[in-house]
Image (cartoon, rainbow, N blue to C red; front, side, top):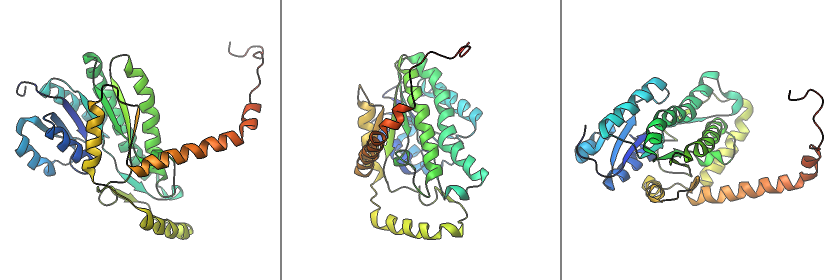
Length: 287
């Protein structure tokens, strides 16, 4: 067992770089203790040297369910509890939907969705027993809508959010909180070493060229430490929200998407309501 408990205990996946690294640094800077997990741990060595036994770095591939459960058990044995769990591990598979191989599509879901699911399942017994804790699910601006080139990434984040909404309701009676965090663009390796790409089909070349032009004109990214500061405010709140948007890009897009959907629903209200008619159930139905 480590030294006498002080501060909260965090469990952060994908902690070696990008937003995960920023969350780890912010938690340590607040005097908390952190279990930082990642596939490779080399980049965490300076933090371990600086913060000593307040940082426990463990290797983990979140797609390995058995390894996830074993790592969570090791974390609890070491620090005695978990207070904040950040499901951050993920990567971006970029390409048109038609271009994805089965292996590429499954890999995207295995990390971004199933990895978060396995971690959530592994920590819940401990959080329930404590009757406390906060699950922070790092989603994306990509969960606000599906767009060309990032459709499979959005699919993984849509799945994460659907699961997390249900989990939030299930865990609430045990005193466990859950927040879905939807970041906009940040200066991380998501678009470099964290990126995989499909083999492009010639048919999509014009659309790709148009998208690349729009990305170049409209990309606005922020420093990861700003996201970490927002997450620190989030976990400090006695009543955290189910969802938290990070950045003006995500905030504005969320409202734009919501307005567009409401306008469409209203325009098609008559058709929608006509699809339902109150009636007695047919004989034998539901028996």
